[in-house]
Length: 235
Length: 235
DNA sequence: CGATAGTTTGACACAGCTCAATAGGCGTGG
DNA sequence: CCACGCCTATTGAGCTGTGTCAAACTATCG
Image (tube, rainbow over all chains, first blue to last red; front, side, top):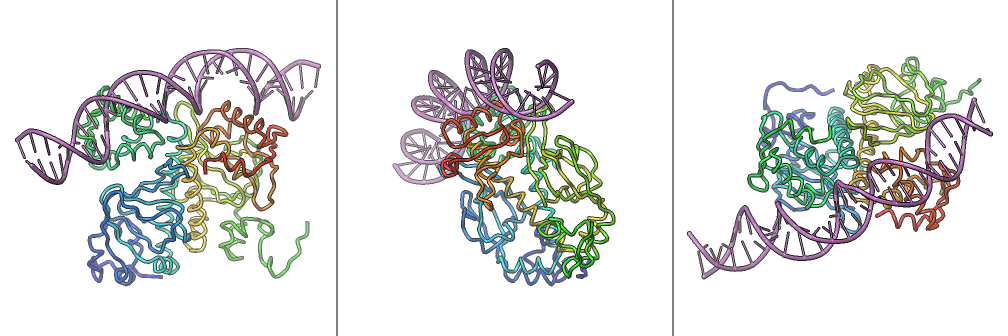
C-alpha cells in the first residue's frame, strides 16, 4: 500500500506541477516518488493540427496524456470512407493498453500538446499501482458510455438531429457559454456524424436562418436559443 | 448430483465448478476463499427471451455474469426509435461499475441464464482484488474496441455492407461453421445496424438470390461463400 | 386448423448523397 | 492597402438509397 503525501507539490516534478493530468487524469494515481520516476522518462511535445499521432496497424511503443487541444480518433474503410470514433481532450489518457498494435488512427484536430512516456514503464506502473488501473478503468467506462450514446446518434438520428446533438454537448456547462470555437472543421464534423460536408453545412445554415445560432466566423458559433437547439437534438 | 473433488476444484463452490466465468470471466480473478464468499450471496437465474433485465434510469443494485444466451443492450430516443449498442455473451460481466443509475436497457435476446450478486459485494471485492479490476478493464477495453468498429459500420457503410458485416463476424471461426442460428430477430438486426426491418429483409434476400447464403429457416442461415460475403462487408 | 407473430415483397416518397459552381476567409506578395 | 491564390464553406440541381405504408406470405403453436 502506498501512502499519499498531502503536502502540496512537495517533491513533485516541475514538469507535473501545473499539469491537469496530475489532478483529474491518470497521474493523480501516482505518489511523488512514482511521479519523479515517470517525469524522468516523459517528454512534452507540441503537435500541429492535422499531424498523425498514431497510424492504423502501427506498433505503439508509447502512451500519452493530452495536455491541451483536441485529438480525434478515426477509423477508415479501404476505399477511404472515414469515421471519427472518439475525441480526446485534456487530461485524457491516449493509447490502448494491453495491445501492441493500434486499430485506429489518432490525429491532432487542433494544436495539441502531449506528455508521452514509454509503453513499458506505464505497464510496469499499472502492475504496481492498482489505483492507476482504477483510473484507467473509469476513463474507459466513460469512453464506452460516450461511444454508446454516439451509436444512437449515428444509427437512429436524422441529419438535423445529428448536427443539433453535436452543437449541444459542445457547450461547456461550467462556463454557461453560448459562444464558442468549434474544434473541428466541417469535414471533421461530417466524419464525426456520419454525414457529408454539404449536409452538415446545410443543416448549420438552417439552424442559422431559423434563428437558433449565429455563425460568426466559420469556426466561431453562438447559440442564441439553447432550449430550442436541445429540442431539435432528438433527445 | 455428486461432483468429484480433485485438486483443481478443491474448495471451489459447486455453483462455480463448471462455470465459464471462473475461467475466462471476471471470477477467474478470485481465489477459492473469495469464490466461496461470493457464491453464498450469488443466485442463478434463467430469463425468458424478451424480458427486460435492467431498465433505463433504474437504480442498479446487482451485477451479473452471463452464463449462457445473448443479452442485448439498447438505448432509445423519446419517440421510440431504438438502437442496440452492445451484445453480451458468456462469460461477459453485465453491469456498469461506479454508477448507480443505468443509462441503458438490457434485455434477454434469447433464453439467458445469469449469475447475479449484490452490487456492494462486487465493489468491495474490487477494492480488495486488483486482479478483478484488471479483468474488468480488459473486458471494457474490448467492448470499447467493438463499439468503435461498430460506429464505422453505423456511420459509413451502406445497408448491403451493414448486413454483410453483421453475418460475417457472426460466424464462429473456431468451429469454421458456415451454418448457424441467428441470435436475433429481423427487428433486432435492424436495431443493431440502424436500419428498418424491411431493408434488412431485402438485403438478406439479395444475398440469397445472389447465392452467397441460404436461408433455411428464418433464424437458421448457411453461408455458402464466405469470401464473397466478406467482399461485400466494406472492409 | 385457425391465430398470432414474424418475415417478405411491392409501390412510392423523401432525406441525404453526388457533382458542380459560387462565395468567403486568410495569408502572401506586389 | 489591394490583388491574387488557396483552402474551406456554402448553395444549387438532380439522383438514388433507404424509409414508409400496405399487403401477402410463412412459421409456430395452441
